Amino acid sequence: MSTAPTAALPWWALRARTRARVRQWWHSRLPLADSLLLTQRNVYILPTRVGWMLASTLIVLLIGSINYQLNLGYLLTFLLAGSAAAGMVVCHNTLRGLRLHLLPPQPLFAGGLATLDVKLVNTRRTPRHAIALALLDTDHWSWADVPAQGEATVQVSFKPARRGLHRVPTLTAETRFPLGTFRVWTVWRPAAQVLVYPTPEAQPPALPPGEPRSGTGVAAGARASGEFDGVRGYQRGDPMKLIVWKKFAKSGELVSRDTAHMQRQELWLDFARAGALDAEGRLSRLTAWVLLADAQGLDYGLRLPGVEIKPGSGAAQRLRCLEALATC
Image (cartoon, rainbow, N blue to C red; front, side, top):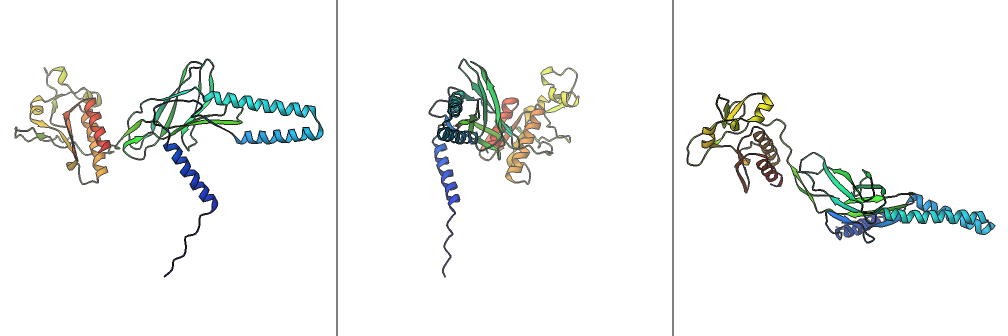
């Protein structure tokens, strides 16, 4: 049984594939750095469509001036050519010598936009105009003028595909100042990474019941409202440091931490007890529980496959748990 030979790709498809492979090879050779100084080695220049049209016009003018011996034609041709050459030098110098610096990106929850703050530093005594920055192969440009011996900050956004630790996409900066006849650009591969937390469950169930501390043998439960038994109603004479101020700011209800319960029980947010959901659904629920326990000022721990974070509270505990959930 014979099979039909595979049809050869058309020439334009082969050309596109070859260009894509060459481009990928070239980008892979670029160094990873969060700060980039633009020099002649990493700044590129080519005529734009307007530039090619101007060049064609100059050729026609020159041929006409030669055929008809037009002195004014020569003058106009060389004036336009000189202006284009001066514009080429100015355009290249607009980027050359500029320093790009990426500020550390902030973590975010899945589904949100990651915003990159890029600082443009100009050490020259003259300003730089019409500098654009964007993700490579996109048309969402952010523009800025950089003052003389000053700085400007440009924001570029992208949407990570899912939770986890993602490398910042390749960026490109370009300018066509002053005439638009030349395009000067650079390609930049930042080394920074963006941490993306799981999306919190929109309506999570109540916090799970507490577990007895080792050696106490005391069972603990959860209140019907979903609050951990480590808090109770405020009683006159309770120390100010035991009042859960976050709860008061949210509901106007004064509650205090119950030190007796806190000594006997622990709140554990366990992956294995997060409900009959898939892995991503459980992580989403655990993320919502972490935020809920933190908002109530509770001590809580986190158990994930291969990871256990001891109970604690505060911003540092919240960030540790969210990072573990993002990279699990």
